[in-house]
Image (spheres, rainbow, N blue to C red):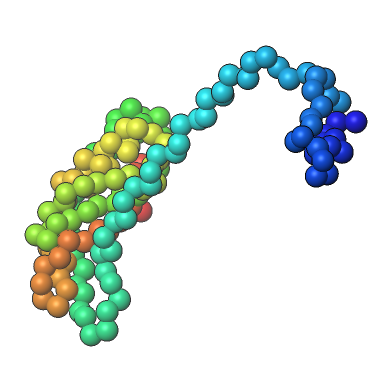
Length: 151
């Protein structure tokens, strides 16, 4: 039997008495196992973006307008292979309407088309968005359609 002896439970005992040696679980290892390395923690999430338009009662938001649309050049290698695709871009504008960042929201699967869309979006010019008559930064998205024949 492993555990406390009767001496540990009565007043007349000299103290706790414990079994020593092998137990029913076997012998204790002389060294503890080496600690395992944990995987690195996931990266922190990106910071929240500022909302382009807040639903505010009485506020009047005027969205930006394309002043000079830019048509991306169709990469000749893909055109010669008959490849058509769409590329959706997200464009961030500053308060003057200038393009400050372009991201590919949904790529075409072809790096050449995605690159052409990114360059064309960066070359676009917009009138600034306004909220209650004051120019504000704005984020918008649109899609470039790469087609062999115009619709």
